[in-house]
Image (cartoon, rainbow, N blue to C red; front, top):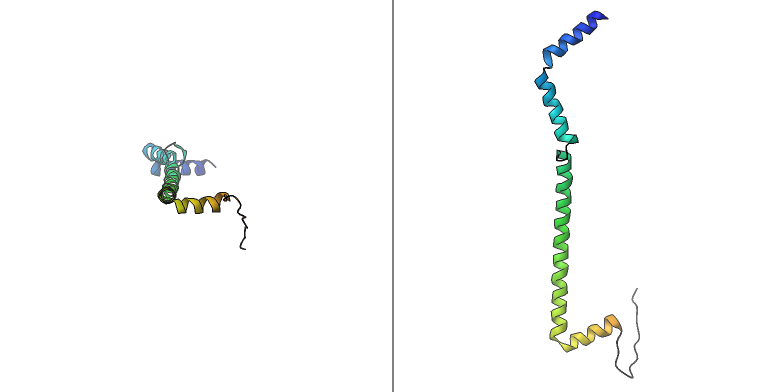
Length: 102
């Protein structure tokens, strides 16, 4: 038992110095434990990519809405068509029939 213990101790002294142990501990902390760890950075990068794609999607939607608004403000016929289709408005003495397509 004593020889096995001394053999393992000599192995530790030979291959593992204090500098190596501290370096391994530092690397483990940087990868897994720290607030600014590599794992956390990867999660932040994924979130940033997702938010950038959301920004592009909403920017495109804003541009489409601006185009529609410009069309409605520039032409009275388009405004009347929009009001009839979206809000089911009608002129007096006019009947509206809704046809739903499947």
